[in-house]
Image 1 (cartoon, one colour):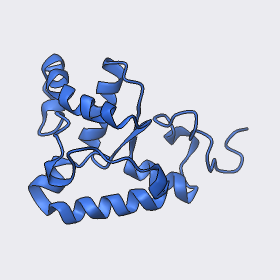
Image 2 (tube, helix red, strand yellow):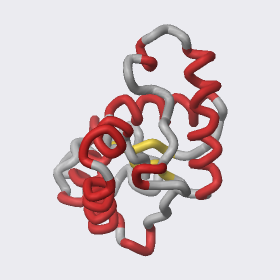
Image 3 (cartoon, helix red, strand yellow):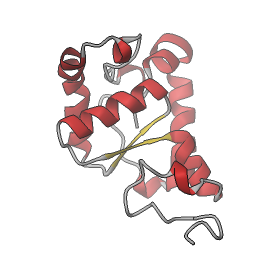
Image 4 (spheres, helix red, strand yellow):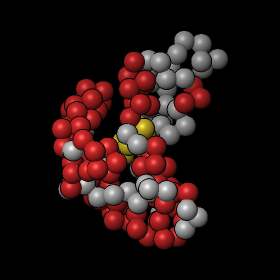
Length: 141
């Protein structure tokens, strides 16, 4: 799971990072949770925040984000969960650009999926293993 800079390091600190992990483990099951190292306030920046994502310097942003990419790949996880929109866009772009093969999913997507309220059109970032989980009745037709 990505610890967003603005929320964790610059604002609420490790207590909110622990709260995020509690939610994620509740949704996916503790046995399916793989944490990055380092984590919490020491986690690496994704490289997309602070306006960098919209700056137009894609090559530089991706080069900076390579540290995050390598950190994600070390986990061997199939998904990287991101609570932040900028982190989501950057981490997803890194996977696509470097053909890393992991899926990037926003935390709210997993929460909605677990509650059975995630619509068919909101599943674009889910892999085939999750794409049909808790599909609303009649959505497949």
